[in-house]
Length: 381
Image (cartoon, rainbow, N blue to C red; front, side, top):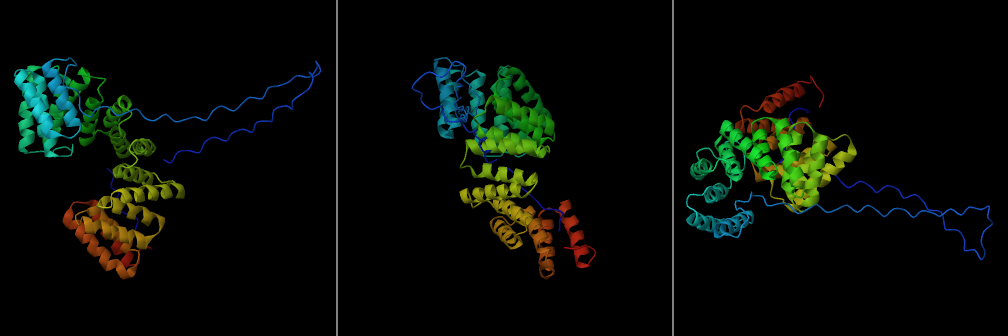
């Protein structure tokens, strides 16, 4: 079966150019050559190009302090540093101290709102925090902050993030456009706006903003990964591969980065070389994190494209053992099982499981129709 294979997303360095051979230096002479003879000095080859390491990533959160040595700025900087390090307790304590020092300032409220949102551990997906009490509390704090100081860019960024989590697209876009206008040199402002565009179906705009973020913060693996995902969703597969390569280069032991690169290579596979590289990246992702069901399913997809059906089926079963609600794995398993008349009944059962998970998934109906055609001999497996 060819329909409905599901791939879930979240390059090796080129060989150095050949070095031209250098003629040997002339033999040592005991006397000067005749005047009519010209001695040509041989040029030494240029030194090999050494690839510069990426610069360090900038802090993931926009600074709330004004950069002075005042007590409030010291407290805000302490909170930012703690939040960037994932220490929510220390961040909360520092932002609360800043609020005591400046109860009518916007920055401490923004910090406290950040902590509220971060503690939910929600993905920055559209409407992922709808109805969440902490997100709603953060919204109230952040709205107060931007009322106090509408020109405080971090407040607009965090409010836009909250609107996105609550499913308010208009509110998110308004705040995030304001943030970018106020702080055009801040990678995080462009990044959150890009994610908002991506979440609301504006892929071209998302690529533009996420590219700006990656350009402003080229040492951030996450920003290159986000840009790669936007490019992939926008059909720019070669650009996606490039960005995921940068993500892998910066964070070589990040399983998700290897998985994303493997998925992009599969999406644009133009031959055996791409497929071989994709399998290598997906295998590396699983070696780093064997617990992820999507990693097993994606590797199964690659193995199925290679024609290794038994290995592909085994990976799909491993994926479903870890997450029986992964619809794409059920669909992929069905496409592999349908190749053999002896396992077509099991293929139909797998499609039934996928239908239970999402009755509206068009891939299920398409594969069921193709399975009918296979069973009635209307098409070849």
